[in-house]
Length: 214
Image (tube, rainbow, N blue to C red; front, side, top):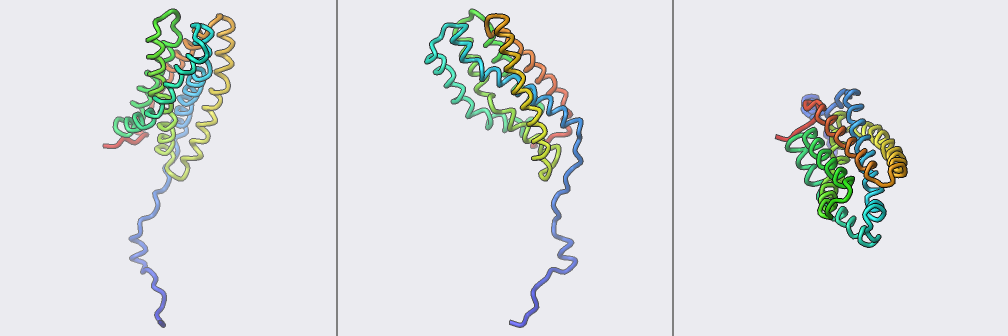
């Protein structure tokens, strides 16, 4: 009663840690990451859209059998985020991206091969499923590394917009290739080349720009 409200002294106020100021955004790195995410959008969407159709149309699977085949992707994809998220923290974002794109390129290549044993299709499903949703989580982390916590959402929004362009354009191109060739092999071969390009672009990322836990 009667006491004045407590207020911190200037010395005490000075000792309070201030929020970390956002780092300056490297626009070149943002565009680099956007190109990588574009390639992911252009490749994964073709596989997701046409793999089951290719099993039915090109390989003679029943729709039920093809659907059961695809169910493995859903099961395996649950592991993709934790596995490669941990890898990106331990070994770096660049190493994780190169690894994921390389595995996905193999998945697309195996899907595009014609007249091969069924085990190749299981291997394709396995390679894609285990990496399916790894890249979005890595890219989101990279946006935070580049822009800091305050502006990460804005940077990730731009990167996602570029990603969506790949999602929109690639299926149309893949469909045209399938119509012209009579099967989906050429479409999957296109995505193989794009995924390899994604691995190469990822390998050119500046390692110093992105965090790695020690």
